[in-house]
Length: 90
Image: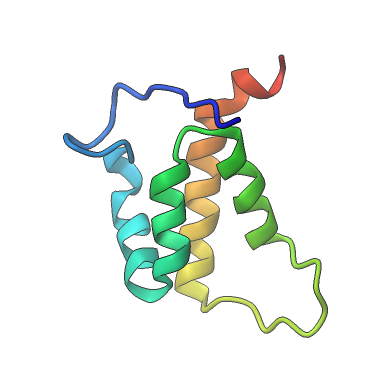
């Protein structure tokens, strides 16, 4: 079950906060499947789990993301964690 957390600082018409909308747009442009999944799962614990899998490679032989993309993922991870942190402690 996906549990969503509301965010009053979202971009109008979107649930992604304005502070990281550029990072999400970058991911939608460079890696559409990742960017769209972030948009879909924003505000859920499932997204935090997904972002963790992007940051920590559990499969060998991965070359990683370009520097700009990995920075965007880390920023999104940090901002999203702030949003859902209270949900993680329950």
